[in-house]
Image (tube, rainbow over all chains, first blue to last red):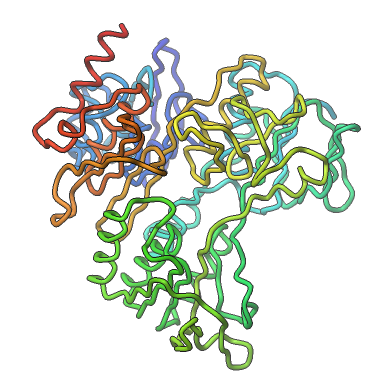
Length: 107
Length: 412
């Protein structure tokens, strides 16, 4: 099964198995990954599931939608070129492991 | 058994357990819940779930792996019936009992029932739990004419979903405008237009006096003006009631919910409450409030979890809400309440705007329609106590985020 590796600010990390149809946000919440709140459940309302995608993997993912970009423009943590909302991310083929970094804060 | 017992396994109950555990609480944690389901997401129930866009399986918010990983004992399908504060014991249906050192009550709220003739007919629905949603979804499939009683969040979201499914929908609202308790007239009018454009019939200033039925199955809704509207399915969304009976019977002070402080603690030490069932003083609202929202449930539960773990930090969040209806993304921060001035930014006609509300010159709330970036900036402004001048707020070329950034720099 594909995996997502969550890297925290203190460099500690946890890798979990994630079905390809499950969002990275929901996978994080189900596994109690600290720092990803996902308050709105993935309907692009809250911007509390912000992550930084591993820079080498950004090109393997579909580009963010306009709505996601608008929310990203106002995330609480530092906005970077590889910022994404994890509710919009899935581990798509051919990726076997997606690596995301959790920001310092969500709200 | 000792340790922490939590009644209720929705957003607040689970969040408090998680926060307490992550903050170093090392005693046993047990969550009891009268529902049979693993904790699930509620907001999609009135929207994507009814529309078949999210499966039951993907509603699940926390699964067994989570509870095992956090060493939290989850007891499903068991209702807590009695709370004895002196014995520090919760009795469950079936007479099992749990002893505790600390207790969190996160029993949520339930749908207010309509008390008119015929209210017990088949075909009259409420929407709160996943089982409600499964029943409603199944019956919607065969229904043609739907009447929604109540123009609040649940009613309007179900109205939008039913209209999208091609049903004939009528909304009956007792007040003079939609979402009266949550938004200002400008938003109410915008939402009314949106629903009318989608073909939904909206009756304002109108009450329901009874239901007619055939064979105890609802067939029509009788209105205060004597007219009746045909209905093969009725959804009643007329507000929520705190599930605070177990707390009241135990002698905890309840005033529209269990009265708690900024740590989610009741007036009895070691007894906490969070979420829909709790009433707290919110400094951003300048009043006591019982909020029914995911944000409140989670943030209040975090504060309670931290206090339980002995690492207290107060609950100080600006209330946030959202609603999705058709292509309208409505986001709300703060409670406008009695405001003195408003400023509109963007275009109401184009359905992309925010309304800024001021009380005594201070920005207290912002409603946004399809302006998520603006809403995010507004949330940070209100949380930081920054008020742009109304003229700045109304000027779409003025960068709201610059005020937040300036404050961040000044603070750093």
